[in-house]
Image (cartoon, rainbow, N blue to C red):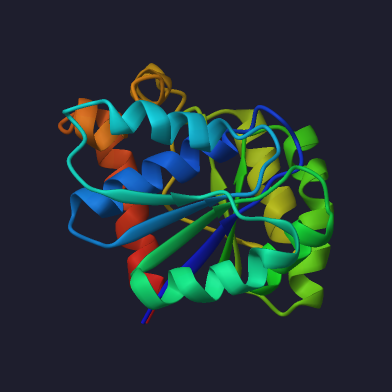
Length: 210
């Protein structure tokens, strides 16, 4: 069955678009039919996809759509029919498109850097996802291996009754390097620690789909 993931975070710099791109590249490289739906007005994911189209090292095909507004619901239905996984890069503000993206998701994935402002910025998304009865998971991004702040943020996430994925992505330059080439880290450096972290995250999400 098709699986829709909405990547959402209201705070800039949390790594929302980089996460969406790496998830797409990882699954596509494994043979899944992947579609991206870029409804973030910055269109950074669309620019990444354009770079990918000209890079011979891309190992899996990824479809991109930028349809938004009143045509968004119909476009989501169309993408579901032709793809295994649809990843939505949602806008940073809670607007009509963001609400529909969350309402349509099988999983709302919220990247959070280990900082309280990132967690605070996600509260609007968490409230909306709860109202829509959507499954929500937090993934720690750009995370250190340990530290007092990491523990504090993890405790705060749990206190809100939100499930945090066991997998986390470290603060590794490989993610940004791959993004600048229109690729995922699993394509540019498949044996790197960053790629291993990503593939572990993909496996955890896949395991939770059942």
